[in-house]
Image 1 (cartoon, protein in one colour):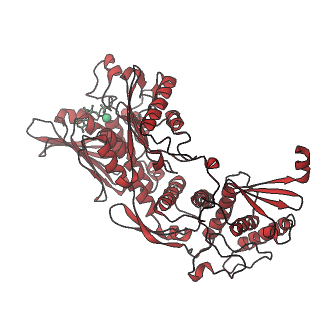
Image 2: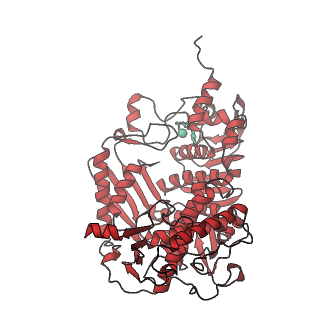
Image 3: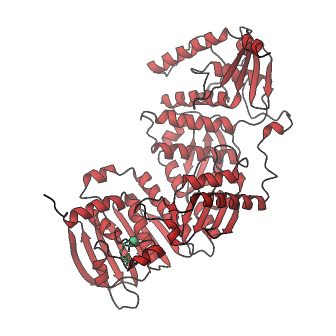
Length: 603
Ligand code: ADP
Ligand code: MG
């Protein structure tokens, strides 16, 4: 039998699309406040929004009738005829958000229309209107959403950890904060300020307040005006590029959106100016005729469709290129190390020659960046598990196997070691040449080392630094302070301080220790944590993922300058003591062997 769905069911279905998590509620409510012309918006969150999401504004407010009506589906004050649809400048226009929120939570709406004497308090639950009464309050709206998904245990269970949900809330909040510097915005979590951003005079000022002054050394403004689109905003100095994504924002007509396609357009402009695998920050605002862009694809999604996508791609690349050129970073930056004179540079490696007795990691001595070289005998690990013991044996046999291929039985001991452009080591084998990719070799070595450290329950010794203080975004701060003990096990000694600042007191071996390197290491760590969603190292795959990411970071962090002969030899020896010396953790070949046959064939 064909039936029309009862309204509570259809509301629930629509709610599933609009309200996926607490952050979606924050987004809808804050956007409503902006649409209402608020000049100040406060967002109060309890328990990452699971208990309370409250948004207070000084916007136009609603009459008691409007306060009831706004919970009806398709009730909106923002459009009245079809022609309006192509000229929308507000965030909302579907009239779907409030009914969807009320379908999955308890809502108390207090509101007072500008210019009227009293306000009203309307209480809604998923089963409908509970009450409406007069209420004394200032002009504006104060809406509280409690116990989201309380009647839907399956949805509630689906919510992630408080940290993850809070990060999403912070992201939604930041998008609006960036779009509306002229609005004072404040975000409070469990009674503590996350952001308290005064009304800013310029976008730049707002960006600096959000990202923290030391996150953004220099912002270059971009601006282009064409018949198709106007582009404005800021892009980061190439030297500020980070190895983790984070500050990449696109907005169209005041709305945040994601676009891997336009991201490529920006990256194209930075080509060769930043190291591979790093991300420049950008805050790019498109403005176009509303008819030129469809933001209507999905109520809660952030994809948009442009009419002239390919043209905009070109315009965007050109605009960013022009801005970078104008700021004349281009001639001063040269990542092509091959063209630099091949002078020996002070080494960043610090290790004892293999003949000296190696100090134990736990003795408090300085950690060698590379461990004592190849052990020809299987070693009994004191604290090792069964599995670890087996791995150790495998490693030893790998070593023995490889030992035979070198010209001298002391592994790479006696063969001459050549270096090519700081990237490769070349040495002779019994029957040919061995070429080792230095960075990948380091990556493999660190990867196996970090994995072992994670397997061992004992906390790791780490390089002790003169504490380096970093101010972080609240998102990163939350990630890094979630579980200090686990991080310490990895070798990161990070002490939370006030005001989103952490003191970094120790790093795992492999990472450089100047401030830039420490910041990069922390960036990489937060990226690894954000990606895995938790520090639960017992979960399959997470250890590997974190170890691989950190190894990649450490390998490039220390990779500058030439190696001394001893260092080069130690690197090769250590590589061959790895369980899988042939490939880097990301699956690239660490080495190339040219046999005599190969050479003969080529000559
Ligand atoms: P939409 O934003 O798509 O119109 P919503 O369900 O988000 O739909 O809101 C419905 C209506 O409620 C809005 O059109 C607006 O008239 C009113 N409204 C919602 N929030 C506020 C607010 N903070 N201040 C004033 N009016 C509001
Ligand atoms: Mg709305």
